[in-house]
Amino acid sequence: MKLVQKHLLKGTREFELRDDEVRVRITSPFKKKELSVPLAILNPEPVINKSELDFHSRVKCGPMFSLLINKPDPATFQAFVDAVKAGAQQQFNDFAGIQ
Image 1 (cartoon, helix red, strand yellow):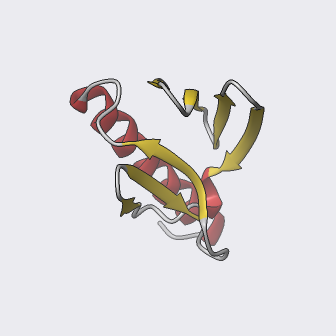
Image 2: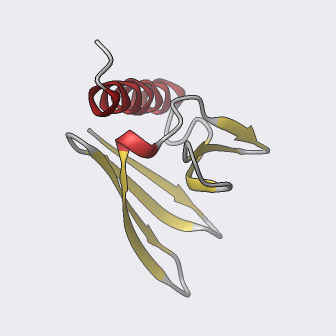
């Protein structure tokens, strides 16, 4: 599953949900950034921060990555958020041995 968000000042953000991770690519006029976030370390309950939805780690302060709320459209955005939340919960349960 993939989500692409475009913003005039923040550039293009691409989020790709893989089996056990979220790959993030951010391209803005002044920088390029790529990172991979394992689902097992994500808190499945994101935090709303103004116009962004932040996914935090279970152990580390600060967001691991942020999504622009309702971009590109509310239905696509919500489907991606639900998939990340479900994946994070499932990966943590598998890691912890919870059935």
